[in-house]
Each structure stands twice: as C-alpha cells, then as structure tokens.
Image 1 (cartoon, rainbow, N blue to C red):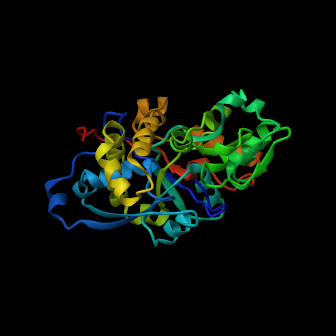
Image 2 (image 1 turned 45 degrees about the vertical axis):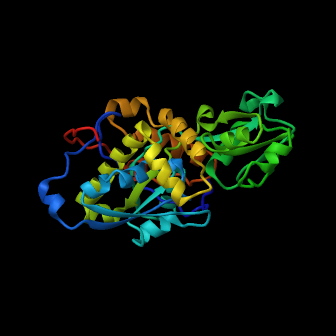
Length: 336
C-alpha cells in the first residue's frame, strides 16, 4: 500500500464500542428511520480490497442506511491525497493508516481518527522460505523491494543492520519475487504472500509488528471541523462502520462478492484469504477490554516516539492525545 509521503493527518476519534460481539450505540430510532438519509462521502486510501471490507459490509448489509446515512464509498489509488481531501472538506470521511495520519497532522492537517479495525498492522516483508530467513536479523546479501519514504522503512533500517542488502523500489506486484530466489519485498500479509503462493512461489512472512512497528491500520478518520460541527453524524458513521466490520470478520462472503464486482482484479479466493487473515488482526487485548476498533493513548505515543526516533517527525510536532479521541461510554446495542 503506498502513501503519499507527508500529506498525512490525524487527530483521532474513538467511540468506546463493546468488545468483538457488541456495538457501542443503540439501534436507530423510528424518528431517524423516517428522516431522509444524510449524504456522506468516504474516501479510501486504495482500490477496494479486503482491508476495506467492514466499510463495504456496512453498505451491503444496510447498516449505514439504518443509521440514516447514504454513504458513497469512493475508491482511492496510489496518488489519492486522502488526508488533504478530508482536511479540506471535499470528503467527509477517509481511510488511512496511523503513521500517515501523523505525517498529516505534522503538516497541520486537522484530522481525527475515529476507529481502528486492524489492531495489528498487516505490513510484512516477504522472503523465500528456501532462503532460510526466519528473522529480520538474517536479512543480508539480497535485494529488498520496499518504499524509501514510508515510516516502516525508516524504522526497519534503523533497527536492522541489513548488511549487503540492496534496496530497490517496490514494484507493486510479485513477478520479480517469483523469478529471483534472492529477492524479498514489502507486502500486506493478506495479499502478496497469497498471490505469490498461488503462482508457485514459496513466501515466508516477517511481520513488522513483531519488530515493534505496529501502527493502527485502515483507520476511519474525519476532520476536526466535521467532529466539532456534526458530532452526532460522526458518531452514527463510526458506529455503523464498527457494525460493518464486526459483520465482515464474521461473514465476509456477501461483501467479498460486492468488492469483486467493483475491483475484478481482486479474485474471490484472494478476498476470502484476506478476510481470514484479517480476523486475528482485528482483535487485541484493548478491543477485548474496551470494544472493537478501540485505540489507546499508549499506542499512539509509542508510534510518535518511534517516528521521532527515526527522524520522520520533529519532536513536539504532534501530540498523541490530539491524534485521537479517547473512548466514550455508550450503551450497548444488539449484534447485527
């Protein structure tokens, strides 16, 4: 997944939603159901994939509609300035990763994260199982295709010696990996490894989270202006999105069929694999204690400290408590 370098923002809103089996607000009132739905735009950070599954599930299963929202989900791509669009109000909500949101806040983009469906980052390095590499410390004398601009790359290069490793641009596919046994590349654990294995490769995955770099992923976020002026709408959007994500990890098939219709390059078997891989990534001790999508001050502060240590943020450029809204207490609702 590419980022657009330094146009990333984040000021994060988190509603305390009950643990995996519960939502955090009551069901829509009859009055809300009678009202004309509010038009809402949600801008993705990439083309429709499993990492967006919960948002599409909220659309497919009518959870947005039940919340009084008519949501248009707009696909992104490699050059989509998601943070800028949301900060300026051209999109009401967006999807981005926590490190990119911090980049944005450092550039004075007034945005706020609302919930984090992926508690463990899917970011990985994919190497050949036949290479014998089983740990980051064994990365040496090889070619490694990865971004030179994303925060995880700076963290990796600071933490791991990488002797004799030639870093080249990430090509966006697995073709070179399949043809070169001395080649590794960045990826998402539910995407590139599956494609490589499906095409006869022997991928072995090293998770960046195991190295200690674990930003929240596929965040739902909005602008500070939206939060201040349309708080109830933001809450409804967040709650419906959480409900969609809970549905997606429990029953992804109907949503996967819809995503495939939007992005035929995402085969159904890839989406099925992705949904299974996402399930454990969506749960953590925090979500079990405070609800699906929960974010904590400690996690945000750790990420900020890491990015400062890697020279990607200036000290004091962003504040953890301003990057997200702490959990709020809310009544529980029935499962979808």
